[in-house]
Length: 371
Ligand code: ATP
Ligand code: MG
Image 1 (cartoon, rainbow, N blue to C red):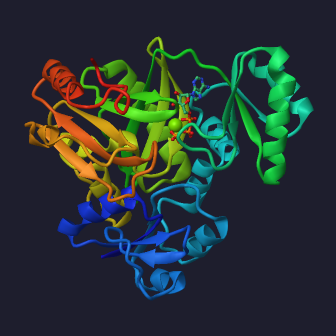
Image 2: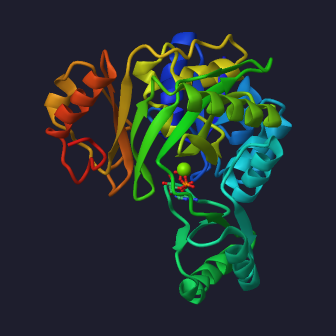
């Protein structure tokens, strides 16, 4: 089986690694350089996107910010999964919000802003404080503003107006500020027959809008059930095939959807060591029409992102239950360079493992670790 992935980052890399034992060969399309590359070495193949589309059995994506002309060509081949609409919804907060409403799942109150008058209407509708997010192109907390008081509205509008002028199809989605207790996400997979399997819910710690630490939660029945139902509603609304991630705010035990990612997700990397079948393999199984793998938890597991560092102490690699995954990327401040999966026999032991790792890792580079 040959699969073409739109996007040539670490997610394509990890799908390629997970596909190899199943004889699934992966190639990646680097949207920036518009070339087809090997997902591990990033070496260019000497054929075009059109030739790749023609040659493979299945096409899928590792991220949602893909030019629509590329998506449309892939969609027209009849080989693209999950669906081009799902990718478009993941890449445009206007479509995403409309999808959440259509699926009937709880999400933060919002208002779409194109003009100064819309900003005033947003303040009236969603209230203050509010979070303002670019409709297109946002990730890792980029393209966001916070508006706390009405007196800041003029200044923030000036910034937003400049931003909106840069890209005509851009807009801002204003959202009520949600005073959440914690953030959680659910990774799940749906196959072509509509069968859904979900992983245990994951608790996520973001620092400055970037994911730092994810921990699989073993004893969260009430929110797991809410998340499962919302997952199924969204996946069914999209007639989705593959792995889908949903990020939630947990407010006093009630979940609100923050956003969706129509792909494998950073908060699901722990499944490589903590679940019977990892998210990367299950995505490939779903899109290649193979039976889905079990999503059962093997053992309490957490994931630590390695941001902006290309070295970690050998003692971390040497620690039992610890698995390091590098992405082979050039070092840049704040860049996702790799991650560490940490496994233990019990949640209490996992907490101790994380504390022990914190003593070996720089506090500035790994701020979310318990110390
Ligand atoms: P990602 O990399 O997950 O795609 P993103 O840039 O798309 O990130 P969001 O997930 O929407 O952005 O927001 C980033 C973080 O900002 C959230 O994880 C959360 O911590 C905070 N945040 C976003 N929206 C709200 C909100 N309405 N109320 C409170 N906090 C919020
Ligand atoms: Mg997010």
